[in-house]
Length: 161
Length: 297
Image (cartoon, rainbow over all chains, first blue to last red; front, side, top):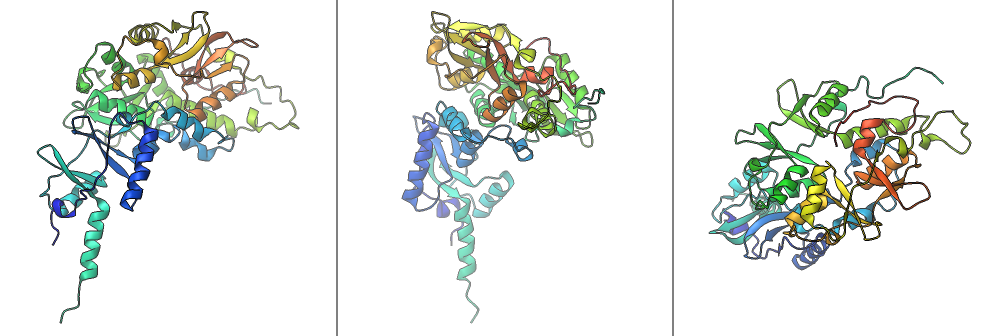
């Protein structure tokens, strides 16, 4: 029975450098998703020495692309949307992964119990947790892995007798 | 047309203009982490809290620029550079009172507390005030954008960029170094500066945002301005309608436009969202929006 991070984690994880331009990061997300056969929404950011320095999620990228005053757009009818996405992309040219990654990272050990992992994810609104031991990255646990682990338990239940 | 003057901000309370998302970092968080937050959320400053999550200061782009100039390592804790204490207003304060406090302390952002439980619930900043004023104006039947080719002339005097802009241009040469750019921006309390070539023509702009990115990328302060400047120079003309210029800034995420004199490529000043907030809502002179006096910016 899968009980700890080591049992659930994905060891075929993808990483990215803080120096990578955002435009390149988007391509890497797409390639990683194709390779894994599932959507990859976040990646670990490793510096040149292999140290975990941050996490980059699609949410981070979309936050940067979102126009600052978009909250008033819904109340206005004179919005000229032409060119807005192009302008956002133009601005993103000088932005690197290290400029928008989340640096306050929560990690877990390989023996962290899955319910503890679930608790951390729920309380801190985290969807993926790097598994680290002695500064070495062993894998990553996605919230979907936890979900399917629970789902498997439900579907595996056989009626008694 | 009614001669009575109305103030678009009268009766509005802080709650109507604040941004509910507050960006908070601990006092031991790094400068690099603060830069990521400022860039990602397109904000000018963030709140710093202690171990008990109590607010103890503010870190702005200006503080980070100071750290760059002093060559502080990017992993330095925010408590080494924050401005303390953080200043607050209350959720139910009149907007005018809060703006008065911003003027008094010459700051661009106030954090907002809920009087019910003293918790921090938002932040109030000039660009957000311009946005709500613009929203107000855009709904007004006398707005420039409400006019059709068949509209009859209302006789309302419309404001131009020339009425609200800050006159005078500060610039640096393309071969001046980044530390000199930081000195100029700091000395003149500016958010961005024009970069000119040997003939005095504007070639690009360097903003505080460009400089904190340079800091985060490890760019030396000895780097020439020409290598870090942004192009093209976003501009408008003195005789452009004020609301057109404001709309351009709001929808393009630009905080300022460099202003050219009519029929010329010569720059005569800068028009920023702060100027817009300081002067009026931007549409016409039919109603008087709050005039926010800023003695230094």
